[in-house]
Amino acid sequence: MIAKETDSFQWLEFNLLQDFPEVKHYVSLKTLPPEPIILANQVHGNRVEPIAEFPKKELVCDALSTQTKNLPIGIKHADCQAAIIYDPIHHATVCLHAGWRGSVQNIYAESIEHMQKHYHSSPSDLLLCVGPSLGPENAEFIHYKTELPKEFWDYQVKPHYFDFWAITKAQAVACGIHPHHIEIAKLDTYSGDFFSYRRNKTQSRHLTAITLL
Image (tube, rainbow, N blue to C red; front, top):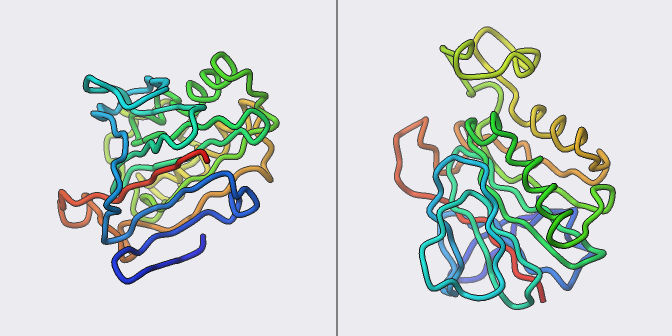
């Protein structure tokens, strides 16, 4: 990822999206942008809501999609994964929130299928970018046998600790996204200079957002 800043705003950008000037995106650090962003009431599910204009009602979902230009969509997050999926062929995108519950429900597969249905996307064209989130050295699940499906158990890096970065990549590849179209930041929110609910129960959040230009 690439770190950028102005006098009033600090953010990260994905390397994978640098070649697309028609896309504006960021992962905010300790400051939030002044511009209005379409956000959802996130409930740790796998629902994707298509957006064509600023909504007139609350959105209850964990992923937003759009093909509309100049319509910023975003996801708030701390330890959970926030990801952008971009289709450069059909100029469409999804911005999603994936905690461990979202991973169990495979919100990535749901989002990819949504893009196929709504925007005629081909998985082989999609770019997936995953920002800072809880890393494997700190992703402890004491009750994993009741919380996580057995197919996740192979991603245990030490007793009770799981590599959700690798789980996400495997889920995306299984849906048809090319491995070289996937950027996972591998920046651990627990051990790095990020907001982390697991570390200190903070209510502060980062914001990952994208606007199609």
